[in-house]
Amino acid sequence: MGSRSKALALYKQILQESKKFTSYNYRNYAIRKTREEFRQNKEVTDPQKLKDLFKKAKDNLEIVQRQVLVGQMYDGGHLVIENQPKTS
Image (cartoon, rainbow, N blue to C red):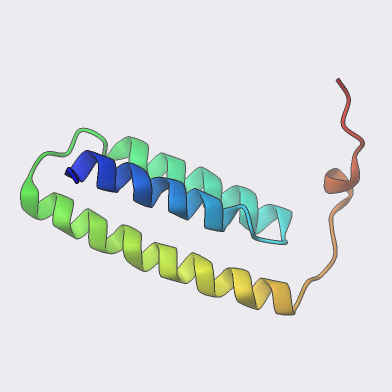
């Protein structure tokens, strides 16, 4: 599997985990930050830099997974913005 496909798989995995946050603010921050980081580094071709970025992304995935579990244990309820009915 090429580095591009590995990066996309890791990107999707981080986004999926980020969507599990019970807190609206944490969830949106994690998704926004992930998108921003991957977008900023999409043109990187240096093998060492790519290796460092993969390590950082994997570490961040572990952090997100851990924080999702902690957030689920101490759920503080939902914000008013989350309870808005969806309009078509």
